[in-house]
Image 1 (cartoon, helix red, strand yellow):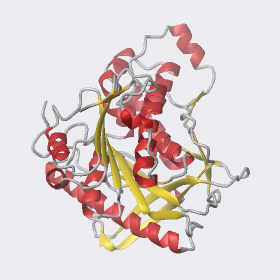
Image 2 (image 1 turned 90 degrees about the vertical axis):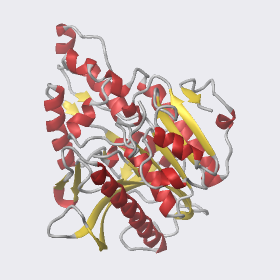
Image 3 (image 1 turned 180 degrees about the vertical axis):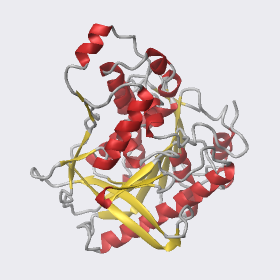
Length: 408
């Protein structure tokens, strides 16, 4: 089915139906387990794990609470300055005493646990949510040359932690990756002190609501870039002075976050290369195009032949461009919920009808193969365009990643 005139499809806009809905949207079909087997799984705790990063660098992470006093938040009344939470993931020095950071902070974890349990129709009391591979507030790795920077924007109604498997891997390969929560559009954002700010999006957003969200996302991203400039110059809050090479900046996003990457590139030339993970293009950039490198990565069944926004955008790309498709994948295969959902399905007594209804959203691809292919091509893209390091992956289909199809 072709995309509507607005350029919005289910691939570019995740409904703000709650974090439980996001979790449900990723669980693959699995054979029904026997009652005895399910009872056995319940005997101990279930520990969810993220795939281990593949790079050679240790990883650190830190979160920042930002306030943009030059803007009024369009979703608050009375109007207040725009607040954001971001996380920086970076190559770090050895810090054995620093604790590994959780996937979600404490209050957000409990909110996610409650809502996901209701939708999955099973208890999550014995589930431990992931711990990342990054050491919290570890010192930045010292190098003669500063690290290139990559920004990440999640899907509509989603949150920044859902890209952690891809983000950690880039950081382990020598990038500083900055993830952004778009407050009042994200399903929830936890601020310092455990303050939770929930979504203020309507239950059925209109094209005008989506257009406003995209504009705010672009402004958020540009403000984050300004903040990184201050940090690199020696902002006292975090020791990142001289660690960020802001002449080498890229951006990627999933779903509506991919549209955000494209539109922000059109508005801000500080971003030199972009990637859209399965999101329809929305905004002026579909018509104006870009003169810088851009990568489209699709789930199976999504592409230029059935998404008019991709076809239009592709025709206006004037720089390096590629269109890849991930075989046997669904839209949500490009998030952490693919590996985590599979683990929950295997460990918990989730009703078969609930599991069966989710197959179209995650696809049948093995999560480990999926994550490996995504990591390889994301790194190859940013290595080529931010580091000038070519890769044989761009010469054609690779036997190491047969799940990736090149779309001419």
